[in-house]
Length: 321
Image (cartoon, rainbow, N blue to C red; front, top):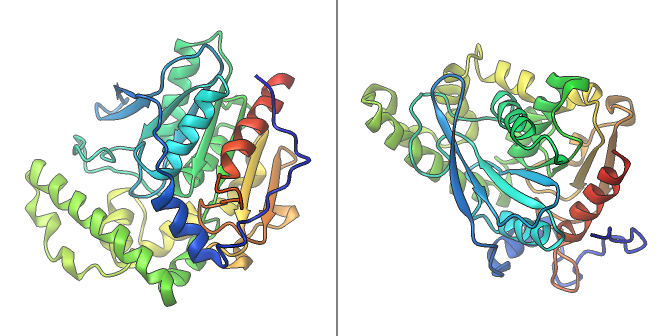
């Protein structure tokens, strides 16, 4: 396995001006097939479960992907990265958060921006089961936020050798306001439809119809987080959730090599959300690009910058371990 040279910087596709096109086009046009995946359930300490989707094992280090809100292993970005990692010799898997496969989990608990416990448990299990292998993690959007919380809480005991987080909504109050403006509201409506549908199905399976009343009244992420996310996951209210689950405040506590990849024109956030140098641990490298959208980063060649940058960074760091 060889790392990509960083002499080739990211050059955004000239034919995708603006953050919206960089976000939307890669999500609908990345049609290359991912490796055949094998699904594995994993039981969690509270008796609930989640699912891991594994690519074939080429014998290299393990990399666990954490998807974004409403995403999973079938998301375009996950297919691209799973394929790229497999091609570079990594044994890649996507960890689906609780209920994210469409099959309701056993508890009301689901997942959110500050959910670091489940990733920490799964990564610790992988470290225990495959102790002879190096281990890395890659989180995208919400998955990146959850990963950063997990790494910060574990400190020097984090079970991974290195990590990457892409398009993380570092400051949730700002992200919530941004998604209620202009074209960005389209993303919010699309994801909310899926969240409401999954929550309604979960309440049906758990025989809790009282918790699914008037779901159509939830017209924004703030509405959904105030009614469901915050109370279900132990936050005092939605503002408490946004305060405590914002990952900008935990970056100083990360103690393993971690790369953050971000675009200033991300339509899920405002440029002011980007953390400053004083907010970063010495272990954290922040890479900010003028363009790239939200988990887009499509180059003029039509290929994703992420599919060469992420494997290259992981290989570089793992050689040092």
